[in-house]
Image (tube, rainbow, N blue to C red; front, side, top):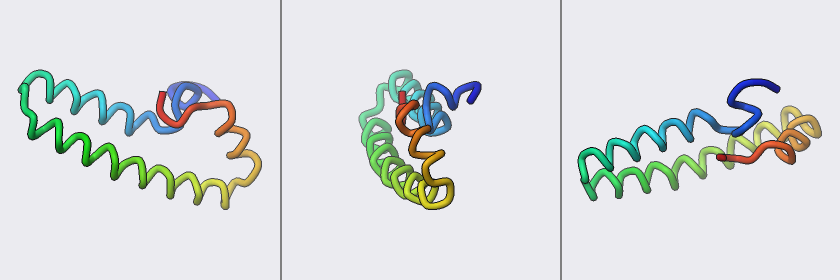
Length: 73
């Protein structure tokens, strides 16, 4: 395993969160912060369902990857 996937199982979602958090800080918008939280909660549930699918498809190989690499950071 190389690159971002050795640090996070979901680097795309982490990148989205950091980008949108930066937008919230720059604009100082509480509405964007609330939107970001909704996005993060819904993203978490999407990630959980993707992980179940990966476990079914890849089995022990994916569960050992889950043991080595954290979900986010």
